[in-house]
Image 1 (cartoon, one colour):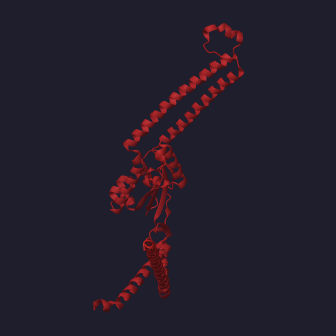
Image 2: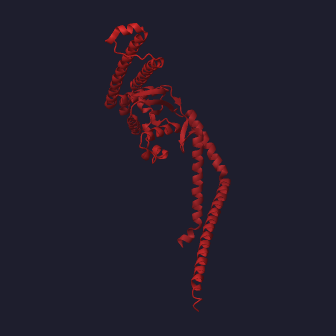
Image 3: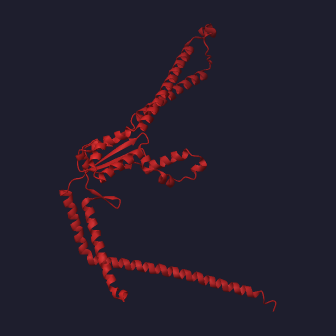
Length: 362
């Protein structure tokens, strides 16, 4: 009897394992059954959609033809819309001001306040009323973003830099922070873009803060330039003295006594080293002067116009659809096709509900 007692827990464990496997099997069975029902429903929906399109294909085609014809008529007979793009480079952090200004102008356009808009942009109210919309977007490639990310992480502590990912960096970056921006203007008149762009740029450049920053930067660069020029002149003077000493005969050097404070080692390699060091120093100073001059030229303008169509706006026959620009004919064709499809689906759904109307009421 005592020998049979230890066998009872083993049998209990076998029963528990059997129940566990059975439960796992039931879970998988229900899961695959759910997947099967889902696939079946999707297949039936696809088949229903195919038959729906087959049944109403003629109506959808007619709607597409009407939409295309309407777009063509609007393109030929409608009032033309002109578009102009201008690429600018910001030498100061003017991006936020630029974006806010564009938003303000669009608000005035939406309110149809052409008088205020014309006064702000320095154009007549009639030309201001022709403006349809203004937009601004950054001009930057993925490679430029990677370069910015690399430069940003190099300025961080190695431990902190390891926690920053490229995706987080791009997500936290603002569009107005990028130096190159594209301003897009749409209007009903063709000869309005140049004045508008010029006044937008001038108003931002007239901001006292940016003018003060520009003045401080230019003064600092001028002081640095003068300091380097003085160092370069001193270096050149030292080179001329050194050259005269090298060219002085040995007996004359002895006669000079203590009048010459420069000691020259007679070894050829030492001479070459001294001359080479002075030459490299001059080259480095001249490079700094070139870099400073370039910075001064950049700082001369708060905002630079890189490229602009000015008054040569082009006719824009495109419309935005799901984030893409489409020709006006294709746009209206798709819109009418979608509209007729929605109407037919709504009618089909109403008929479907009518079948169960009596059951619901009863």
